Image (cartoon, rainbow, N blue to C red):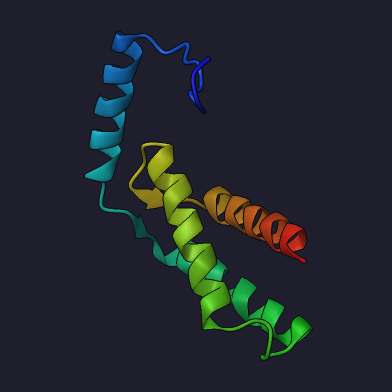
Length: 100
């Protein structure tokens, strides 16, 4: 194999399907309904009280919101669910644990 080429098992049709999917989900306007937003805010306040304001800040919260919206978008939905939020907390926690 030449250079760093990675063999692909994607067919041309698969690639086109993937491009179409990515184009569709990129158009989604992701929102957060009031009950989920309240759950997110409650989790932020609780975590901030547990860990202290120096480590849990608006950046911590914002990162998790971005991840939750990304999960929602990847699943082809327009509204963040409580499950998306919980999954974002888990993903971010795992990522932060690996960084240490």
